[in-house]
Image (tube, rainbow over the protein chains, first blue to last red):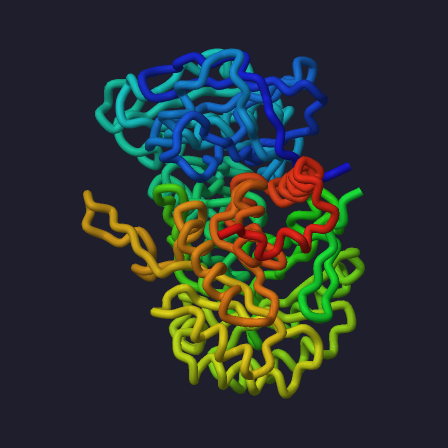
Length: 257
Length: 303
């Protein structure tokens, strides 16, 4: 069996989560392989000549019984905007599975998951499938303002939920690293982060200072997603590595941050 | 049955659809999707004598009907290839062609000598047209004396099929093609990318770390096709055409313009199966037009 595929999925759901985020659920007509948090799909954007390349999105959720996978699509530019206009019943062509996943935490380990922007998708996916006791899982989601947060109440079954907003309209005020959970990072065995570069760099700095294992998922611009264009490179201690094949998940100690 | 076999000098390939250098890695990346032995051949990622880190990020920008790249020949060097990659890929049942790059003529010679020893590499593509390196690369390929010198020196140390990859960033590409033909090139492949640039207007910043980069994709196809037609009419050696080929029709156009084979490049980023779809499409076209051998299409433009 081939390791990667290019396949037409059917759009079975496209619902707004707030003004800029959409949940897009895609169904395959065949069995989908195991997909892990941190892995991504590269999505063809149809119906426009302006968009030449695919757009990569982290996997947010998988249902192996229904053969569906879900993405949270945050409108960032013309590609993501066009994708959110897709209709239920349309086909959506994806290349998958791509990239390496986060290192799963071991039973009994305390983990902190930090998500911002579209980076909440793999964090919530990891919380769901990590199979940890909810007491061991802390999720911290950051956004600019209250209306930028999506409703994640049903994830409280997987751990404790915390929020920040830059304007103080929801949760604690300030960037995620100003949140009270950052006061004592030593209680965590593993910290995971996904979101804007600045956010991940700030989290990485704190994790390093506290000497806690930390993995982040990068979102570098890419053309192919499967390691041939060499455009999405990240400088690391092992040289320039492709985010799409050697990542997108990296241990922060390997990055030149 | 239609016959898809074509010859590039002494190199016989099972069909005229190859994958362009820099868009198919070292074959294994495409082998994650399908059996690469179905391809007419693979032009492996540009290789240099020593490790190269390539250019800084960002290295690509999407443009209208195409993209710019400024990768800058990132690769681990020929010795790493020989020790680590070659043993894993050498038994794919299709020609694997190394794209040879250098900053100096001496680099090209030493690299070619090493490649000449590799039994399962039947040809090289001499890249004198990379627009994204500070030294060598395109500098050799945009003057006749430069192109002649590299081709002549490499020819002396290489006895298998020598393909020279030409830059379109010249006034008259036929002059360069004739120059390398005169120095013993067995074939020319064209075109490499067009030098271009893109700007983030809001921030007044270039979108590429190198400011300029190479434009590829359907945006360049009509110009590439014109150049292939001109070169086909100017030289006697086989021409390998490329530049924005996205589908069967594009590939047929390049064959009719005089390409003995085509390379599919940037299209692979959109869909790695496009080369295989084109092979099937060429078969269908030949059946529809009652053509027995694909060689009957080469240069078959009616004017």
